[in-house]
Length: 354
Image (cartoon, rainbow, N blue to C red; front, side, top):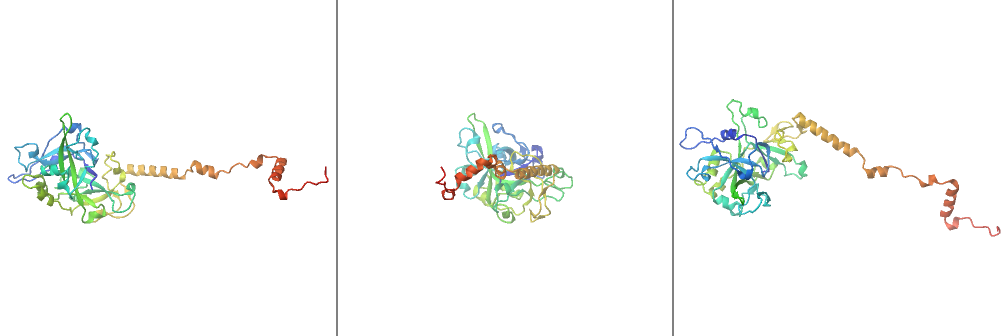
């Protein structure tokens, strides 16, 4: 499953990170960034990309230029969450969850089958994606969140952009995910390009986090085969999608749960010891950011104060009710006691007394 990604690179930097080798060329080629109107939606770099956000994806250049080589690539901004081509009206109200599509039965889907047959394959590029541990029974708000990324050079830290261009020979390795895209037209004829992420059953160590994972393309050859639909037919391309064996991940704060939170704290690792087998060890979870620590402390204090304050009902139960007997005079008390005594215990009237 893939519900959030992280992509903070500007288009120029993204072009540089997506260089590729092509037969007949001595130097790596760089994909060109092609901007699209997309009904007014634009790409905004973010630490917390959610469905309906726009991000650049790699596609074969021939989709936009019939005279181009199918092996050439473009970076095109598209909306995450495929809009059905038959949908009428507001593109945000088609009512389907299309940010992910299952590999199983993909070719026979009414929604995803036609784009696949038309060769509309794309590669979603990102610095990493977020995943919540769902293999253990927990409340959604309590599920630990993880940032998943490709292995990096030892000098590169995913949470520190200043290390991405350290000049030590290392280069940021983007995470590349296989997807499909389609084109939707509104009533004015404006085009909206949108995509979906292909997922399948998880295998290997990552299965301890989630039972499904995105179809990650680990090598340049896999990326080339997936994009070049004229050279590699659909059935063969689908067979190339295999579980990734080289993923790395670390625990992050649950502030990423809120899709409106786009701050740079989203992909910061929590201080909880060394990483083991790509995952993290058990231990107290403490954010590295002092600002985040202060925020959590204040929030916990408010929760504790709320729990300590007795409710109105509890106050009523604890406060003693006023005794109406205290307001009665002594004569009235005697009279009430006589009236409430059983008949057989009341003194009988003396018949000899007139």
